[in-house]
Length: 240
Image 1: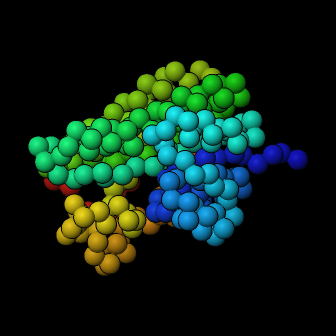
Image 2: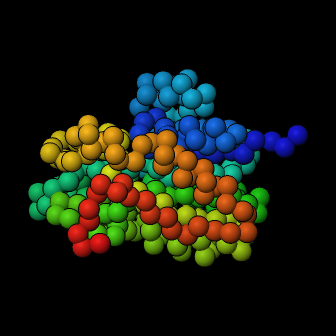
């Protein structure tokens, strides 16, 4: 009997991460979710029937603990964890705000990829999906640090693909925008349209992004999806 594929989803307790974990589990994968909120991890783990590991993506030691608990292989890594940290003009942010934005939205994914790469190279297979943001493509005031981190993640993913392609490992940058998640609940985003229940109903739902991730993973092994952008049609970006 063929063993189940192994998947790790960071930031998997809530929002997009929980939707991704749910979709991958539904496709028959054995899923681990990670995050910093133990209670939320336990609740989502029980609801979805997936394993959970409390871990902060910005901690190399925590990443080592995650990989130590895997059964010797990893088929899918979804670097979903991210955080707005502080959405304000740069001159209204502290040095710590800027450093944390880069750490959680870029460095954390890099730490995970560094550990996944040798394992997947040895297997000669694997899929890494790094969740970016439309902020990597467009510019809005207050979003400079977050946008820089996500833009860096896009370029990191492209370079990583060139390193892993010959080993049968695929790397995708998945770029969503407004979603029915808690992201817009940060105090800095008071008045954001995605807080409106009527707007949220027409935004991307967590399970919808999860199904996109699952479909990318199901792409034939000899094909790679390098970049995938998905937007809710009610969101207008000017200029596009």
